[in-house]
Length: 494
Image (tube, rainbow, N blue to C red; front, side):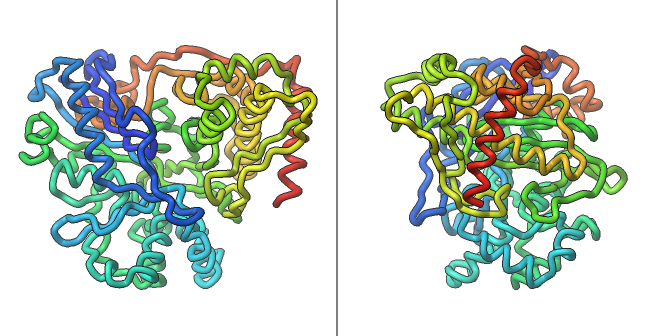
């Protein structure tokens, strides 16, 4: 039997099909081949049309089915990973009412901050484990305040993965983990966060039916099967936000284990069994994929919005699009640690939670026109991204998440030796790289949820480690000095 996994990102939609027995990925595809359209009508806004996700998903599925030659009737189940914190609203006929307000949109930050103060900081942290911040619930409040006629038509609210499951099955459902990502889950009461729903004046009926993360949640209907070239009745048996799913993809399920990713945004994600939170909500705590009332499994998440997007911006604006990322890495490798005095703050992709929702913008400092080249900028950008990770990891350490070993898929920024070596060098952690990604992880999650695998251990029995990067102790002082310079610059702006 075969398993399908979808990863609904903000840059592209990826699909993979794996052999359930061997774990081998038979085919993967992503669309669009250039970055997916994102609309920013005002500074700090970011929207996408959910139909764009569905259209690209159909293209990706068509390609992997053609490549793999798998009989659609031999597919057991589907798992869905998706960009976190987005808001999708539909009417009673399941028509999308407006573009999705996605994860990096910062318009609702002030709304969430006001809610935190008026509800009470301690009450929010004890019940929600976070500030309402710039998350899904606060984005819905923005719609309520600014688009009242549209708000009046809402029947259900969803996160992006719930929307894809709806398109596949015709049924609107969600999970406790999904709701926790939107700050719509009360951990103390183990139920929907009525305190926040009441404060914002939402209808409780907006919340879809709640199903377990790993379970047969619904099935592919006739309409979707025809659109996708699949067989009706395939089980939809797993869904999770991209960062909990990335952790699952790396078999990070137990307290003390750490996963990281560095695509458009960058994340360090640690699992804890203790109910802890950052008093300033600079790092956030959500339900992990295996969280339950019997056993706490909480994901402590550090998110840096400006990660791969900074590297992409430099590629286009400084490299003119005429240099590959490998070429950028090669040029940067000829520059010494510390980039000969250049420091770059990568915070140019909206308000940053790690900076208490400040929208700082990216800053480049220390440029000398006589000695610096584009190679210095390429290296300083990668160092700046890593140093922002380190800055957040120091906050994570204060609530008990101490990174000794970090697991990541060998993709995106982790393809860069400079990025990997700088992260190992400045954090002191060993980096382990694996042959997996979000769509493959979602496929394995589907197998767990459908019962095809008896346990997560069976699902990940053939996960292959590709590479291990140990910290270079001989360069420890150089990395620490470069980080110190970077942090000193940051503190001038915050």
